[in-house]
Length: 112
Length: 118
Image 1 (cartoon, rainbow over the protein chains, first blue to last red):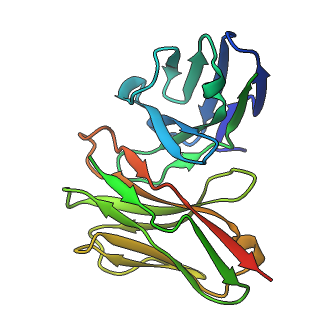
Image 2 (cartoon, chains in turn blue, orange):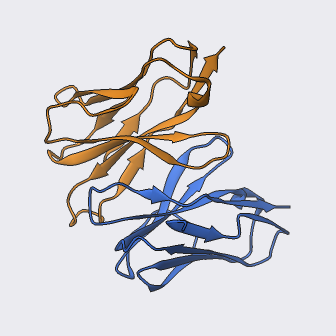
């Protein structure tokens, strides 16, 4: 079974649309993250949740809204998509502070 | 805020040779964790090796080992007997230990692309 799974893996959509990426982890971790990897492959944290509570919210446009219904799930909703949102979005999870972060396989978002 | 610097955007190594990837970081914390992740073209992020700052002994995982210099804030990755499958982008990462500091926020370097020549 995949430890951190995210869907969809590939997503092509038009500018202005709203889309969601779902993430689930079956590792029993209490902390989940969303990272964005741009075309230059720079990896930047977007959000972090700990036991469903938002802990980290980096400088991300408010068109991006994470939602954590329970500590095993962290979804990412994006409104009014722009060309610059095209990237690979990684969901990740970890148990507590300091422990290894486990990544999902990434969701490739292309905005046309 | 912590920063992680990988000064080598690209590196290459001959198959079966040894290569060292550099990483330096800046922090005011005394307790933290350091990681190296490998990202092949598939974009999957794979943990290579992990080092706890309170441990003086350098971590090793088969052909992968680190040279951790806490005072110098340096954390280099050595790959011995390089294989074609080692070709990937490698990210150095810092993670705070304190649960009271942004729930263990991680900071990643910009990555080093490693090419392995046959």
